[in-house]
Image (cartoon, rainbow, N blue to C red; front, top):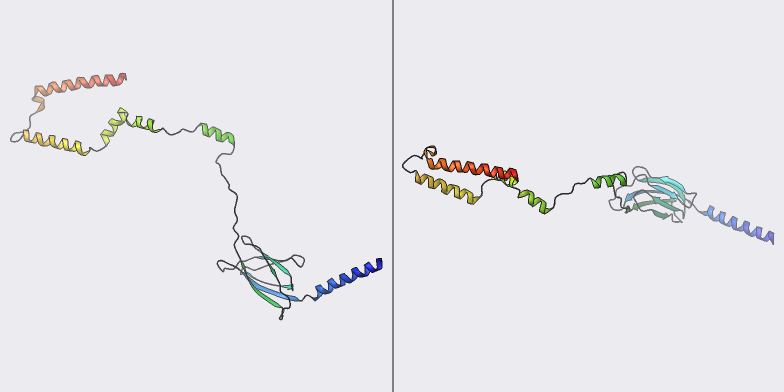
Length: 213
């Protein structure tokens, strides 16, 4: 029985060896290009997974040429492209197999990365507590309506249309009053002196009230 099993094993081994020996050698030649742009893909790896994982690389022009067996499986791989597996056909008449291999680009979805300018949570807490938030609308309105702000803006902003009209009418009125004679000197007018003194007194009182506030 043991001799029979041994003979059967040897027969199977010889049969497998004979089948392997029967596979003819083929010169596998080709070029590798991008399927979308038809540009060559240089330095692509071609691995013969049917024969000891033998690896051959294409040159910078995408060209390759090496010897394989019929029915060998060749894995074609390159960074950024989808991997392909090519099977060498059998019963090739001229023992040369030429092929143009088209690789398609691989879309790689990278995980989301969040970059923080703080090296640790303690630095983030310190910077967060030191943040000065902007004023709300009510605080901004209060600053804009402040008496000092209004006076400063009135000195720099141009007059509106109504104010210009009033000043023009006042100028025209004065010109009509002094038609045919020169304008009077306010320094010789006692009524003007009294009005000036009252304005000065009121101005002192208003400044005192502003200082008290």
